[in-house]
Length: 264
Length: 318
Image (tube, rainbow over all chains, first blue to last red; front, top):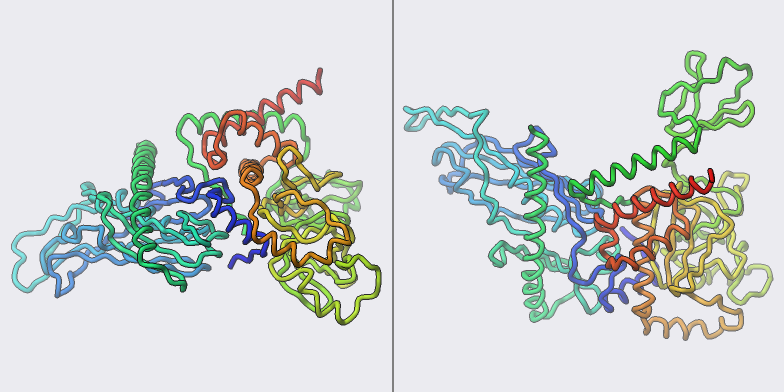
């Protein structure tokens, strides 16, 4: 945990009140975000996202499995975040993926997606960085085409043939980004650094999709928030997400371009 | 704890940066003749007799091999390897910036990026009332009023005690608690020992302390307090809390801090001239404070460093 002296705390509070944070950003400005895709060759898709000095890797691994009995027409997604020395943030992104696209044979075979996040270095705002990395990794993911051998019917497990050459891409336009608003003093900021996070009274993480709809909302920190402030924060998060999505899209596009160049 | 800055460059910026670094390494190879070794490299000693193996070396099959990556240094018969990217190695008289992590009987323990915590004894610092006298038990109980946990402190390395612990001293007005600013951490090898480590940048209203241990303090300028003012310190502290650092000075602090971050990310030596140079360059080319950490200014700074070294080289020859 970061320890800050009274003088430094005071400096951070002052900076946020005056809309000029320690690294020169304004309250609602992100640090430069950069994305690299295809960093783990063994995985179906992977991406590394850095947000200032926060550095995370997400990998997507697809496996054939059996759909859950209650939802025979849907695939499964599970997320594991491994951040060895730091506190583990818990969140769920499942809403963004069209689970129906993961089904191979209804009720019999489906794709299980294992999304693994690894925190390499933490300089605050892990949730946003992880969400960005997962979004990039998903867009990097190729699921092998599967041909089901005919004749399989009834109770038997159908035989499937997984193609090595043909892949289908995911539609990641529905995957939301996470914008965390951290309240320090009387104001809230986006993309807090570790030092700023240590001074937070509460933080609201809002996941927003491309259409500006809120997909998820988590509040951390023990201090109470006025409902009107929460509403205010949500609309600010929505606004901030537009720029974040635009930046992330262009970063993913350029990372994919470089990745393709390397492959050739 | 050292956190690296990541910059994402586009294709042209990458090419420019590579060209700049190539230039720098060309210039560097002309200037230094030191032998660079990595772990397990053999150090040629020409079969001399009575070679003394110093730090970072070991003997294997009759040959001297390096156990760390660094530059081979020779002093007469002694051969040692000066490690690059090592932790800070204190020398007597170094000015350092550290953070209090523990208060122990009659001493504060400070984290200074050394392999052990430094010790600042109560008796090796001036009392707030400025009177020279024996420290009493009452003083010991009131230690927290001087420094408490997490405070950032500037002090001087006094030396190693017999038990191997590192002792500091702060017997002057210029040492002591640092407030109203930010602490930056850079690799210690980037800060070279100089005559002056305290810098009062008057044109910015900013105090800059380049700790030899790689801790750098950038804060609002404070006038060294006289001893008589200490009595109403309590009330001034409260007033201070009411007032934040003025915006203009805060902008300067952030600009200087980002200069330091940028220079250390590029791996250039950190000196007050380089910092001011970078800050001024960002100002004159209208780069926003936050954009100083962006890709374009990153490459520009590397290119400017090349120009600077080329002109320096020309001056030396001409």
